[in-house]
View 1 (spheres, rainbow, N blue to C red):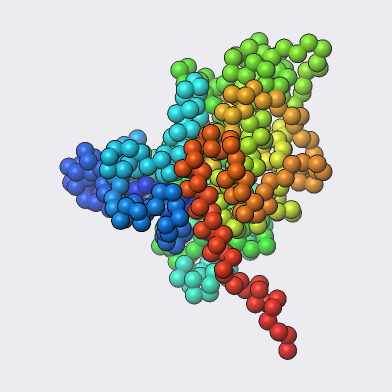
View 2: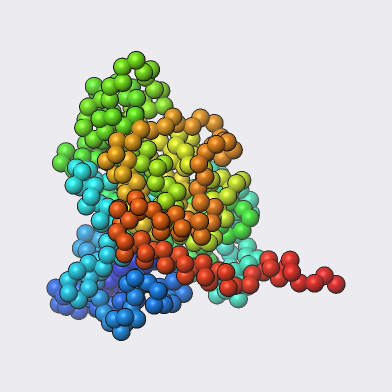
Length: 469
């Protein structure tokens, strides 16, 4: 761990279905003597709860059947670092196991690890970077709750996208967040204001996929704790109001597991690869006599072309992994500068999948996830879709040029959580990639969210339905 200050507390945390860190604090001595060799006991309900930490008996893995016993959290020491929110506290991410030693397969880290294992078997490893936005307010969390989280004052007054002036209400907060993350050994690449008043984005350097998701989860809790300590509130929710939503664009590239060389970039003998999927994963350029070279896939390897084609083929079935809440779909709506159709394009921010960079920096940017996405599930979805495309040698359709938001004829994304969970539950591709239990578990989590929403009377209903005088 970075720094010389003594550690007086260790936080052992796992990740719940919402992407939040949950766990316990222990003394350093207990951590070394007991937790490291044996793991830490934690209630089995941690991976079967909603946002309010409530559970029911409808999950395939349900704590009710086991009498709310314990699972074991085994620390992953590769994630060990000082807690960004307090230097005298250490934090380590843990994998969840049943008492018999089998992995808790419905835990988000396990779901991602399964896809990473499949990727490694194919000879690749994934590098990931997330671009996560939040809205900051002048009110504290307590005051925001007393106001029912409405009518809050944004920390900036107008659109500060790329602005170097007008960020004054955010500068102190965001500086404290950046420094805290840096002191925990996490490299900040960039930071800037965004479009919605009070909106900001901090980007951290890419890392191996699991580590990048761990950093993402640490960042979320750190930002909220630092904001709370300063008497402010912030939110990562996908759509707070009628303004611009919070996105979580995910950048991903693949490297050869042995040589660490990038595999998305075309090899020198792959001149202007047509990108039709032929030869994907073989290192050989596809051969289609008589077909003109494509300009949209210049520099892209056949493997990358099929990987991107897999994103398009699976996107509707996997949308639940990127947009897990009712509110998520308010962002994925026309006019919200977020994808509504399934498409890809070269450096085209209006497409669901944007191909960006060149050479070793060539990568995809998946633009569907919002700030509420669980990064472990979202990255698992991207990898499963890409592997599906490569295994089946899928041909990549032409990249879209122009405004894909208004382009006619694009296959649509699901427009509601109900539509997304129906696609997910009925998807043979999802069942093959994630297994029946995981599909059913995540589907039930979405059903819990839907049931709560459908039973709630909203402010808008009262505004529309209450009699006028």
